[in-house]
Amino acid sequence: MEWGEHHACLFHGTERFFRAGYNAHLLGEWLPALHGVTAKLARGAKVADVGCGHGASTVLMARAYPQSQFVGYDYHAESIRIAGERAAAAGVDNARFEVADATGYREGGFDLIAFFDCLHDMGNPVGAARHARQALDPDGTCLLVEPFAGDRVEDNLNPVGRVYYGASSQICVPVSLARNGPALGAQAGEARLRQVMTEAGFGRFRRATETPFNLVLEARP
Image (cartoon, rainbow, N blue to C red; front, side):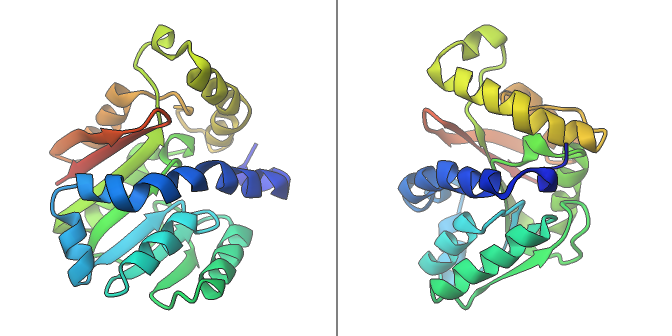
């Protein structure tokens, strides 16, 4: 079942679920945990937010770093429309939004490309990561924020894992299968994500930080 085939309540609910974590952690913890990224953003960087949905993460970063330019990509046209409205309402003029697949946007030279809670849903996560690798500046960084998951099933038998397994079964896995993807699901785990990013051509990969709900991973060329 494709993402866009769901009722609109899912899109709004997903934004509300993840937005609280972004508001609490993105600016103060996640971005500072990346090598040299906040300094670039303060000076003026070029940033892509792939799979941006309603643009909560994009707008948050754009407001904090007015010298930088941000573009949010999502293949769901209605989400892109709403993201544009949210940016306008927030008075953000350094962010724009475009309808584009994770392997189809054409711009390059990005200092930072971010995937917030979306890579595991994709039909071609390796292709999306490879496209990001090619679109990055040679000294650029890829930020991968994913639902917290251990590499073994038994590591996820806890309240957070149970919530994410439920969402994975009903949303994440069907979306990937609809595009003949690998169905990584919300509980992909760090080892599997490392494999995806390495296969895509990234030479450096590490866990930058974490919360009880998120793995925050950094990949660099």
